[in-house]
Length: 423
Ligand code: HAM
Image 1 (cartoon, protein in one colour):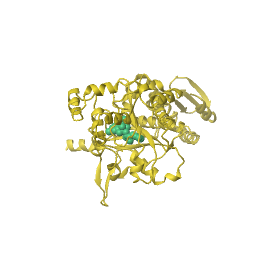
Image 2 (cartoon, rainbow, N blue to C red; image 1 turned 60 degrees about the vertical axis):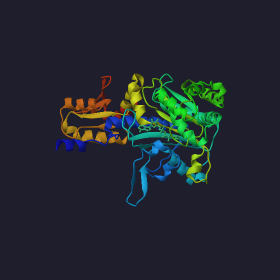
Image 3 (cartoon, rainbow, N blue to C red; image 1 turned 120 degrees about the vertical axis):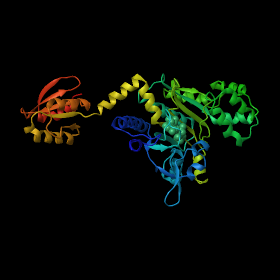
Image 4 (cartoon, rainbow, N blue to C red; image 1 turned 90 degrees about the vertical axis):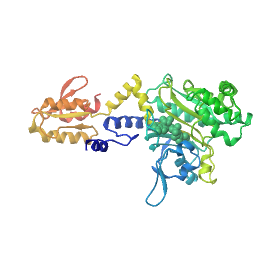
């Protein structure tokens, strides 16, 4: 019986409950993301959580297809919970392409679902911010997106000592394969080997490469190509310098990305210590909108997503980002707690709370007669900044700053100003 009850109290594996502390973290992450994305001129959009499974059959890649939360709805449709945003975005844009000025710069913050093995940094429901720039295939738009990705992380106090963007380009690998006479239709199979570099045993990888008549040495010497010999990278780094983000960016040709729709530049964001999985990733997908619209709309596009799970783990690991998060979350805590020291003044206290709330100042008070000491304890445990003591001295009240311990006596009519002004 107890075991059954315990099971009922548990959430499903890979899913999360958001108790207030966790929700505060999520809100902190979302607010910071929203501010930065808007700062770069991106507009917010969203799509449905449930999509037709067909949407992911075309270009999302084998791995993602095997991770779908897929079922038949009561109307007999083959549907799934969205595992990512990009195909939905391509659908939205293709449907009303003429209505939007180019380039389209959109972002969304939404939940996604993938049936993965739950582990550190990998869950079955997670949030992502997706930022995409559609209708422009210039290096400036790539630089703008990468700069946005960097700033979305800098907003949390992360610096170039903490994380980097690893850049690559799938076209370089396509050229490499052409030079080594590997047929185009085996590109995805080949890239999945490159994707495993550093994560799978070298002997196993070498063995897989023999199927392509290639050796690990050939791969390693290609990986060591200097930046100035790679087409486009010099210009891209110049764009990064203008935006002050060059210290965050480095070349890493092992980045190839697991999704099939990427067509050129690809990148991933990693913590420098490589303790965590990727914080985010993205790239150029110039042909996806054409494929999703069956050829009716052809627009170049690029974008990326950053997930909340790896990010929160990372922000909690580092002392400086943990402290900044705590400071910002406290700022959003209750501004005042009204301590009712004399029950005969309850009606005045409740009216005062109402006035303050109407003035946009967050306050709370005890719902029934409670010892003054207990009320102070409650105020402290809620992280409140001020205690406002209402007692026999009404309309004078005692204002106590719970952080500095300073106290003053003010008239209730002046309270609103005091609470608004003081820090
Ligand atoms: P992705 O690399 O599959 O890209 O996901 C981006 C980020 O989402 C990952 O780096 C990770 O932080 C987070 N993430 C992915 N799966 C999970 C999971 N199971 N649990 C927790 N976090 C996860 C995409 O989704 C592309 N659609 C991004 C994109 C947008 N490309 C162009 N535009």
